[in-house]
Amino acid sequence: MTTLLEQYAALALDKQTTLERLTDTAAAWHVDQERGILTLGDNPFTIRWLGTYSHHSSSWLWAWANPHLVMTENDAASADILRAYIAPDAATDGDDSANLFQNPADTALLTQEGFGLDTAELHNLAAVACGLTGADAYYLGDYGDGIALLAIHDPCVATAWREDDSPARVLSIIPQTISHFDLNHQNAVRAYLLAKGYQLNEDAQHIRAQRADSQITATFDEAHCLTSLSGNANPA
Image (cartoon, rainbow, N blue to C red):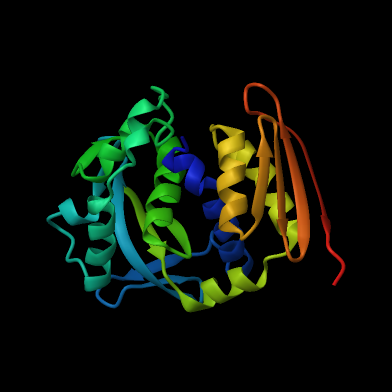
């Protein structure tokens, strides 16, 4: 069984690297909420507002439950996707991990108005929420009293991400994911390679992946931790 975090962590990190290549994510930011536009420095991106984290209460509030936020149709569409998510039956067989969205029971948080949250878990939340809603990237904007999670749905980001799809990029994202997120390596690598269009051949400790341009082999120990990763490009 693959958890939501395992399903989307590597893909989210992959898309974030594209955003960071296109713009300075540390630049001054501004949101035109009515138009659904995030401006980072001089670069505008279309966004959907997903929710906010409060520094004062250390808690999360979904955008649809915020009485002070006037949602656009696009904001509402993403909210509907998250609130309608139904976990697979197999999710009930998961562990009781305290790592956000590594525990299958955390899928219930998608329909709760708000819940306690540590800032360290914001990237887990962002990866899952943006994965489920098909976002091209996300931005966490600190506005003083809290942090806004903005899902970027922008054709420029989407195009740039599709164009940068080399085997070398895939091989670089996998170890970065393992470094950034606490999760089952084998499940996360499997989900990512499938999302990147690879056909898989697996046994208990290996994932052998192939697509037209490359082959990748990942080896894992008995605890599903990655022990080796290799790949090569196929002749054109």
